[in-house]
Length: 370
Image 1 (spheres, rainbow, N blue to C red):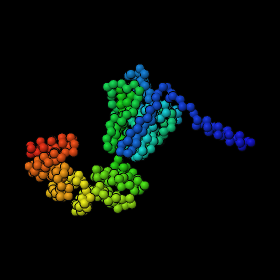
Image 2: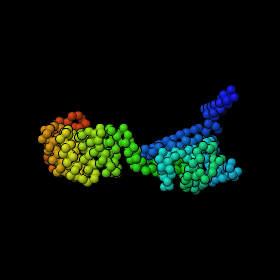
Image 3: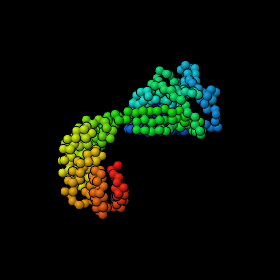
Image 4: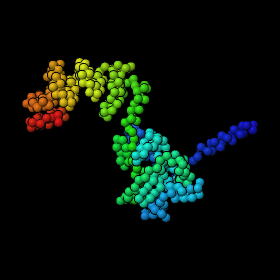
């Protein structure tokens, strides 16, 4: 019986510890969460939002709401040795899904308490492995993972409730701003986006997803668009054709040819496309011919357009291809000839309107491919 009572007591205490009421934040400081991704790297900030509350001009600086420097009462040192909590109530916490750089300095993936030592001309932003504290009363610099210094920026309009925003977003970095009253603190977060995506691709191609050719093609297209990891993209391109679940289609063959082209292996690219054209539609002939034009291989493009005509005859897609081919060669007379044929065969108003614009350019002696 005693053991049973002890067990019940332990269960009661555990339940009491975890089953707390869901109450509004203290001091009417709303809780907020913002999150964005750079590449596939999630960056999340959880914080509480104090308001100005008629304290304009009394937020920043000595004797005001947020005093400069390390001035918060510290319960460990019993001195004013703590920075500002960069929000209200519990720690402001920032989480990075992958490794990043903050203002050019490396920081490992994970969650960090975000603190700021404010100053009139300089702000020290601190990323601490302490994430569960209330405010910065127990702040200890030994848990600092990184400190960076930035200059605060004055705002034209007052921000009543403190907020964090992603104010600039690029392919490989973002800029985060803390804004409150008439002051903003900005810091840049850089992400090794391409290599992170490649690492994820490799993981996923080793899973069930790697047996789906469209997924493999998506992976190769990422490499082609970035012009990176081309040797492995070639391996993947072959896998989309010959691997388990692979398919030999015009699309997969064209993708393999692109891999060869990216690696400047044109004989192999041409050989692959010779096989691909055996199963190509008229539109695919035309599309490949245009690609050759962009590669400055106009004579090869004309070979493709002529092969398309031999196979499919006098149809819109064939004639439309010849317009590009002859225009690229500077033979605007023949380009106009095929443009007039194609406009009579136009499948819809949008195609007709495009051709009308091309005819105007050709009459002016201008290459429609440029």
